[in-house]
Image (cartoon, rainbow, N blue to C red):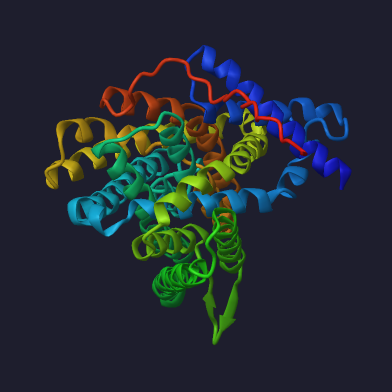
Length: 429
């Protein structure tokens, strides 16, 4: 227990100190946290095997998975705040259209590129792995995007649409992956399962949204029983912890697997709560301050989880570079075309695609599922390589795009410190 607490403390402090260095070169804090994690990981300081200083193995990093899951839950819950009815009236149609089309276009472009690679070099990649990687390419990481938006207090049409699209992207990506992975399994096994390809992903989305909606209604009802800020925030934290735990449950009935998407459950909870609670904005602002350390730990642990061994395989690097080039092309092209179709401004058309490049946890989860393919290990390593690239480069690109769109206002250096106020002495007479 003592080693766990020391490890988390060192990780938190290392992330904070690295963010000070990153500020000197104008890098986002998210990138600093990831670099701190890499340095503390099993391929750098972890090699020293000093208890509490660094992580000696990927298994040790994985033992802190509950922290990462909890952070994702809070991040998704916060993103739900963007789906207020007032905002949906203005941007809902655009967000849904862009969210679906950019993901589909990205999948098609990556599929075509990797299938052509298969035709040229069948020994490098199979058709089943090619179409699976194409579906994984659609996934976008909401965590890094939200942290950049928070750090620089970005605000404007691009930021609003971006946060909506990354939330929608999870549901779209889940459907695309289930369809593509089902087809990939059929190509290898010679048969296709309608249950796993069509029914299970639909059930997962419907159940996730349903449970999330009920949790949002329940939170609003219970929150009314308390009046102090601390107690209302505590019940909000407890609710997010509950939906994170519930989303991890899996069961099977009559051969059909039932599961939940953590991001969809938590996001729907936040969406429903923010639309029916008249004081939700104040609670969201307080929650953002409370979750700061958890979010830092999430990114430091994410950096420590990056497996640098994938860099030693030239074939993985080759496929990874092709994957990154065509995924980036798909995101940028897909976002531009779908934004143009829905009448978005020039700033959104030019910059939205770049802000959708970050990729992390959702993609890695899909890659773990894809391990059942004949060359599933290669799929996982390619995704690991792309995550390593996108997590380190993506936040900076997001920052630059939001800055170019005029939604990050340059500010001078500010301090949040407030001097202690001298209280008048109390008379005992």
